[in-house]
Structures are given as C-alpha cells and as structure tokens.
Length: 570
Image (cartoon, rainbow, N blue to C red; front, side, top):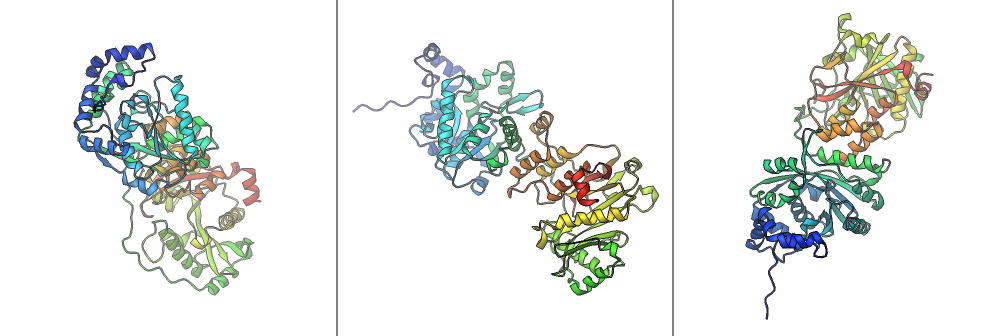
C-alpha cells in the first residue's frame, strides 16, 4: 500500500498549469517560496499537523499554535441572527488571520458560514469547504463573477456570507492620514440588495509590521507577497474584534450601491473607537418619587386659568400655559413626572422631583388628559437674553453666548425640560399638541421671532452615535461655545464620508439606527426640530442634567416652512 503524499504549502499549488504565468510560477516555486517566506508557512503547517483537518479545526489549531488571543468574539453569539441570510462586512487590517478568526467564531454558531476570500488562500485545501474565491488583483478575472454568483446563491439559500469589501490588506492612505482599507467594492451592496440579507459590520484592530507598509509604499504588490511572513509574525498577538448590530437591508435600500457601501464602511470603522467615555451622573439609589398630585385639583386649576391660556382642546386633552403661582399643584406634578420620565432614559436628578429655581420664573406649557386626569407632557419657556441684561437663563449654565447670538432676532424664546410621560409616548397626538400649545403661546407673545433650546442625547445612545449626530448637524458658530465640550473624535473614514456625501437627516437616521443595538434612530424631538428648519450650533455637557450632552439649536420663525407655520402659528 502506497502512503498518500503529504500536502505542501507552496506558490506552485495555486499556479494555474494551463497558463504561461502559471507554468513559470511552478518552475520558480522553490525560489519564490523561500523569498516570500512561504516555506516558513509550510514548516508551520507540517509541524502542527494541520493537513486534512476540517476548516473549523484548522482555524482553531492554527490560532492555538500561533498563541493568538481573540478578544470580543463572545458578542457575536449575542448579535448574530441565528437563521436567515446575513452578510458580515469587515475591514482587513492583517490579510489572513481575520479569516481564521471568523471561521473559528462563526462556524460554531452558523455551520452555513462561507467567506468570500482571496484565491491565494487556496494553498490551504482545508479551507475550501468554507471559502468562495475571487481574485481582487485582477477585476476582470472570470473567477470573480463565479465567486459572486456562488455568494448570491448562498445568501438566497439563507446562508451567512463574510465579505472583506476592500479585497486587500489595509495600508497607509494620504487623504486619511492613517492606515485604513482601500475603497470598498460595491459588490457587497449589490449582494445585499439582491438577497435581502441583513448586514452586520465588524471591525478588527491591529497593524502589520512597519516593513510591510514601507515596502507596500514602494510597490503595492509587495503587500500581497509579504502576507505569508505577516501571518507567521502574528505569534502571541492579541486580536480584538468589535461586532455591530445586524441592520435589515430595507433600512439602506433607499440609497444607491455607492452610498450603501460607504455607509457600511463607516459603520465598520466606527466600531470599538477609543472614545472618551463621559463621566455621567448616575444616582446609585434614587429617592422615592414624590406622591402624585390630585387630578381633580389640577383640573380645577386649569379650568380657573384665563381662556387664552387654555389654548388648545383636542382628543380629550387640553393644552395651556401658566406660571407656577397660577398652577401650583400641576407644577408639582410636572416636577414629579419629569423625574419619572427622565429616569427611564438613565437621566434624572435622583431626587423625588426634578426641579430648580427656574421653575418659579419660567412659564410652563402643559398637555393634560381631561378624561384620565393625567399629565401628558410639558415644556418650560422664557425669554432668552444676554447675561448682561439680567439673570442668565438655564442654558447660560451650559453654553457661553455672545450677545450677537441674540442680536440676530428681535426676541428669542428659550425652550427646555421637555418630556412626554411614558404612558403617552406612543400617542400620535402628544408631541403635536404640545407644539400647538407652543404656537398658541407665540401668538399670545408676538414679540418672539425665534426659538432656541437643546435636544438631550441620552445615555442610551452609544457615544459614537452621539458624536455622529453632532458632527453631521452642527454648523459651528463663533457666537456660542459649550462650557463643557464633547471632545470625542470619529474615525477618519467618517470625515471622508462627510466630505464626499450629503448627510441628510434620513441618511443620518439610517446610520444611527444601524449602529444602535436596539435599532433606535435619531431622537424624535431632534427630527421634529429639523422639520421646523432648525440650525444646530454646538453640543455641551449639561452638568445639571446628569452630565447629558445637549445639542443647541435655534429656529427662525420667519423662515418656518409653510406647512409648519400653518399647523402651529395660524
């Protein structure tokens, strides 16, 4: 009986014997294997008995032999859809180890995992059962069309597909001033569109050796030629993988393939960013909430207000405005329900009521359910003014205003401390009624031609999502600056994305929704202000409000869109 020949790792094993180049490579294989370090890869392959293993065992044994520690892989089991078509998109910082890590992590969760990979990995026959091969160096290679057809068929059969859309290893890029992926292939967007697969971004951290980047800057093909050496150099390294949320394709399909591809790249690049975590206040033990006030007593207070202060009645609710002295019981209910509502957003004062001395001097705009004798929501408002004109307003504790900010308008109305109680947050009428109340207040005070205030970006948003919203929306102004700024930076890919594309509110909402694990998008109130034509000026940390970032905005009432003017001011 003749023993089977041991498989060897060599450049000759992937050279096509039917082509002139392939024949030359086979002849030169011994020399090339030594020059490129492939002989060391073969030594490693033989020493650790990797020949003939299953793909999962091959990946596991290779990582153990290299003593590579994988950090963060556990989150895959929590976020990866267990069934149905899924595309995982990833950056490509190393060039080979990423595929081994993903085979190890994913096949245990989804045996239907396939990886769209560089044909050079055919040197490892153990991986062929889980790899679909393309040739990223030759876009016209017929193998690429074959690989993409197989990939689409796999997704249409409800499989999981891993794609490295850059097609090659990360390198230094002048326009980003950092090491990053090259342009991502739009084929990933095409596959998502045609298959309807969810798309999950992931990100690997780490770099190759300095020599890899130096030689790659001389001739780009050196990067491919050095990959075998770089794989062996991964010994005793730590590799961190960050996992994003699986975004349903329908959230992205309104955009073209170029836009989708760039959005996916930004989502991957923004994972595991070294952001500065805010030292936000969280009361370890909340004081018991104050007792609710008597609904009948509050109803009588409202009925006792002048008729013009009971400005709107609709859907069994009344909207009005008054000072605390006019509605003492309702104001106490507002304080209690503010605290109750804000606690659900990981905010709140921790006290039995959310209040400060401004509650005495501000007007309160409220929405009251007359049938259920319950508070629906409220705002508090006052005239904005430069600090030199008297006691600063609440927002002067968060922002440093130049007088010129207020000189743009005849009179600006400060809005703040807005909330809708949990019981009414799904109501189609609550926010609209409050804004009809604001409109009535403005009609009773015609001197105001502008609104200004903040939208709180709660702790329930990821820090990077918060920074994306601020960076996309803010038009920096010399007339106002935060006293406590939000200093986080975003990945270089975000800034290129912002330079090259218009980031409208819908696109920003899609990005935030895809980043957030619970799928929430841009805050409803922020979208509402944007619909009023708001301008966003700065973001500051509100030290009096659980260290929550507040996005400062203003609305010029003279420029209000016609539909909003008709709805709220006529």
